[in-house]
Image 1: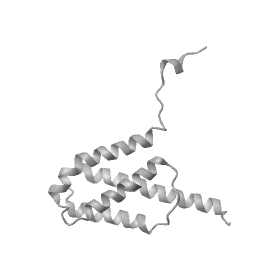
Image 2: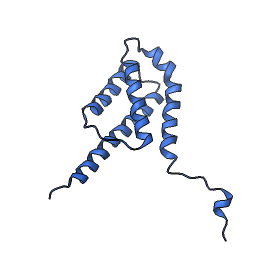
Image 3: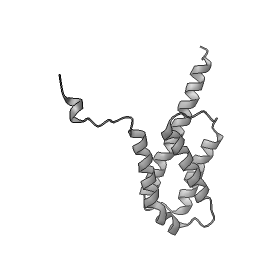
Image 4: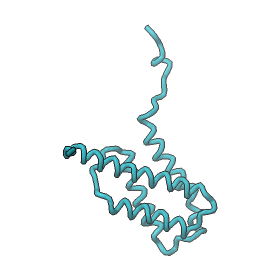
Length: 123
């Protein structure tokens, strides 16, 4: 069976987006785990970012995905610095978790809509 160009493009986009989301999930785990040191953090995050760099670029339409990718790239530049050590990692954990939470809220904003009393009235 042959795939249409549109199907191939959709597959590539889904793969790229799932990789971006995988990076976010891993960052959550690493920032939450107090036993992860700066060296291990750098190694794992670098591996994920290299995987993203190797993957074929696709056009991103979602604000959440664009913002996530930009955030991961900025964080990657920050941790590549030779001054990145355990002390620095511990100092940024809380602020980075806050940023990751904001990204998740952006993602979930479209999933959940708060019902107002006006929405529940029946005529």
